[in-house]
Length: 235
Length: 82
Image (cartoon, rainbow over all chains, first blue to last red; front, side):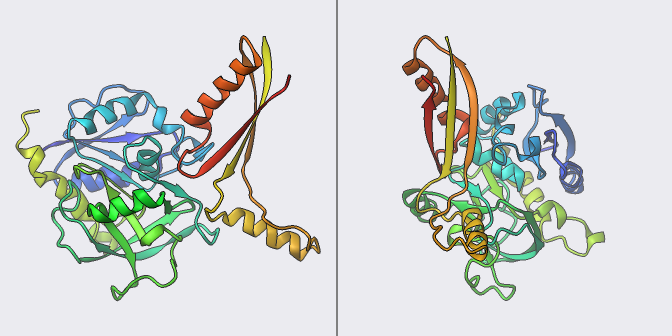
């Protein structure tokens, strides 16, 4: 895999972090403007964090109707790897590419700090370089990151092993009292049934540069290089 | 025919509404102890070109399903001015 499209919406602000992270693992990553309709032969698509369309109406609600999102949906349906980080995760949920929704944080504050995550599922396009149970540290920065879903959806996500990363305390013990944003079951990130579409609120793109003293997030980007279903594809 | 339409969107009952809670606390602090069950949502006004009031209502509901409300977390109410 060489070509990685980073979609840029008006209001994206992690597009360059995401671009740099994808390039760091050896891809030819490039930016694609939201008005474009062509992914330019991408092997993977990354939706970066930020405040697309000023978060108007609801986070991600307007961005999902961007012209490029039709191409992204087609790409995902064909099995192409798609990662949504933070606002990108919100867009994937609004677009119905992942179930549930991201609601306003339980304690009303914008949460911007490093958190600990436990890797729960490694059979995805973006976590196959990790080991189940790995503890990762990376920052969160969001006001609307409380994962919500109806009971049936939540049960299905857990039963099918589609919770990809979960918030935990720094020592790996269960998070006390939904401390970060009040997410159901402390869910930080989920995948679709096929594992090619992944979304998470924490920022692997801000934990992927040795100069910043933390490369725990780099695995999200290197994993897409070795996603087996894609390597075997003829696309 | 143009119809003026009011769409009210509220967080689904049973889901935590931290904004509503914060406003309720503030009301209590101001002495409005009679206030309770505060929910904060959105109000959207629009005009719809439609054949009838029922048609306008139907179009507004379609807009809610597709964009204005999130079916996972929000309920909506459509009112058409006759």
